[in-house]
Image (cartoon, rainbow, N blue to C red):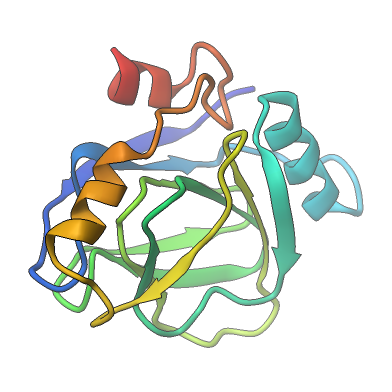
Length: 172
């Protein structure tokens, strides 16, 4: 598997969304070159082969700022394109397209800013983790931040396995 580019960025607490000052958001540009008529299934196979599961398929990334306090999340763009803002209303904005993957650490806010048709996404989580959707403004201060800090690190990267970017940037 050839990854065109890996972008990583720490996104600090914005006072409302906890984000994650310890683990960077990781974007894998061109992570998956699809070979079949079912790119959603190809992403599921990729994530499952690296021990990420409890996943989902959808045509939606929520259009409101939200985060997961109890799980790291990987999102693969199977079809189409989207503009996603991370970290809250003042956070960085990235354009993603088919084949790209976003590895979102627990606590990092994300929100789709556009409504281009044709989007198909696949999500997954490390073993024992699942999405708990928290909306911007729901935070209970230090309690939610302690929850985010306590989320276990994954044993593998959802794209690169035991040698992937998450292992190098999150664990090492």
